[in-house]
Amino acid sequence: MSYITTYSKKPLDPVTAKADEIKLVDIAHALSLMCRANGHFPYFYSVAQHCVNCVKEAAARGYSRRVQLGCLLHDASEAYLSDVTRPIKQLLPYYLEVEERLQNVIFDKWITPPLTEEERCLIFEVDDTLLYHEFMEIMGERVADTVPSLYVTLDFSCVDFSLVEKQYTQLFEKLTGDKTS
Image (cartoon, rainbow, N blue to C red; front, top):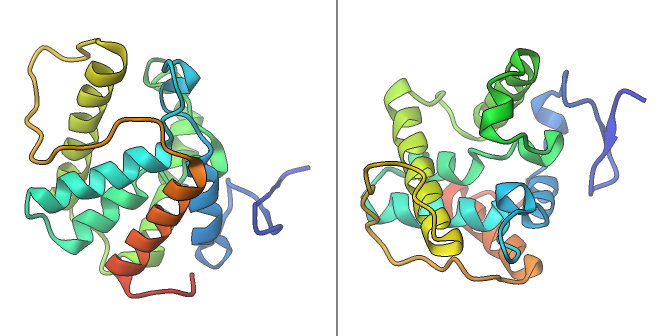
């Protein structure tokens, strides 16, 4: 079998996926059920909740709707690939190629024209800021020497996946005006 069956019951080959096969319902659902930190947090904190928090941080910084949407979607490929932790991911060049290709298909589906390098840097800066603060709040661990500033107070508590899934979808609709994807 060279495909996965998505939440919407559609087969999808993550290696060769095309934009018309990518569904927001699949992304929101899958990410709301995936735990950050490879499940090593003491309680459930989902990838979708992380992405929602990234959008809130980007908005508080005054970043464009494009960057906010990029923050919401920046881990969307994980809905189809799962995730590999950073220390291992860097050792898997083929995985990185597949992840980058799929992530670009997802970005290009909903963000046009394509994100600039500057916009991508802003997204990854927000992502790294959240990573730091999630680990400090949830694990009491500093994952960097420098403390990145948060511009908004965020909720790092355990939130029911269905509420996060709904919030993820509502943010997508707000940022795109698209209720059909």
